[in-house]
Amino acid sequence: MARWEPGARERLVVAAVDLFAEQGYDATTVAQIAERAGVTRSTFFRHFPDKRELLVAGQDALSRLLAEGIAEAPPEAGPLEAVAAGLSRASSAFGPMNHEIGPRLKAAVAASTELQERDILKSVGLAATMTAALVARGVPDPIAQLAGELGILAFKRGYAEWSEADSADEFAPYALKALADLRAATASLG
Amino acid sequence: MARWEPGARERLVVAAVDLFAEQGYDATTVAQIAERAGVTRSTFFRHFPDKRELLVAGQDALSRLLAEGIAEAPPEAGPLEAVAAGLSRASSAFGPMNHEIGPRLKAAVAASTELQERDILKSVGLAATMTAALVARGVPDPIAQLAGELGILAFKRGYAEWSEADSADEFAPYALKALADLRAATASLG
Figure 1 (cartoon, each protein chain N blue to C red):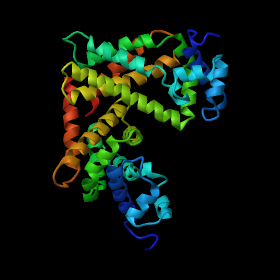
Figure 2: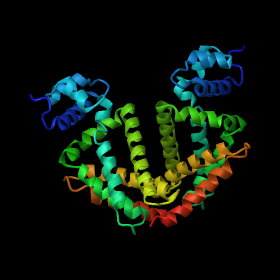
Figure 3: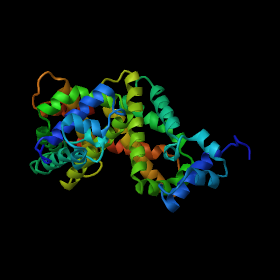
Figure 4: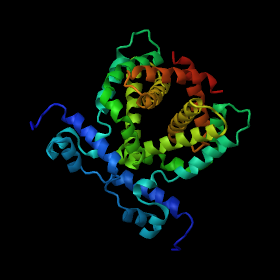
């Protein structure tokens, strides 16, 4: 097997999620994940610093897509329209593989405090990314922070709906629907 | 020294924050914290499971106050009015000791990834507490989640202002001002 064989990263993620779901996160070793994926341990460590990071494998790419979408929204777009553009751009990070592993990933996270914590830190990081991209557009504080928080709530709520859907549709409509619902909810805060 | 001497918990927190600020979080041991506070190591472990938890010492009490304030808000109070009642109730958890250690605590957290992560998890836990208390009042989703997120943003922004103020005033007005600012910001989301 070539050391840089394309797809090793994706295979490692699928193997890890399968093993976490089968035998639990704590009981799963890096060696087992590498073996299941058909790669060496050193290939694992070229892709990920440890098994915890596997679960947030796409965070950097996702963060970049969200920031780019917000930055490139039309100048006249309001804060939530810019967030919507970021969520739409991020949709390209969610393919059939992501949809297929969704339920097992959810089960693995639900069963592990360590993964729940990592998942929370990921969300907070993505919210901060969106807020920073809005500030760079000239959106003042606290509107930028509020819009970034609505963005991550829409992202999480949309992802939950998308991963439970039968078919691997585009992610964007789910996130945009969630954002619209949250926007409507701001009118009912009292 | 009596093993259950009143104030040991508070002294441990102050000693830990001082040591973290002086020599860094990583370099500080439980033994050093106990010695500085004038208690035994076993007294430390009766109050805290480890040094990380020291920094979120008041989380349980705070969580209870927020939930009680929301639960006991008048029936006619809207979601954000109930959140305001929770923040007001939580004010009793912030006394002169909290105000005095504020700057050193902030410096210790800023210098430690581990403490930043713990701090984030604390915030997410408090937001979930507020959301759950709102749901228990009959506030529907996603309004309850949105109001809980606004509540934690107001809490964090109010705390930052309060801890930088010269005198140890009541915490409540700072949090309520931040909540009002966030509420006003919802009108500018575009």
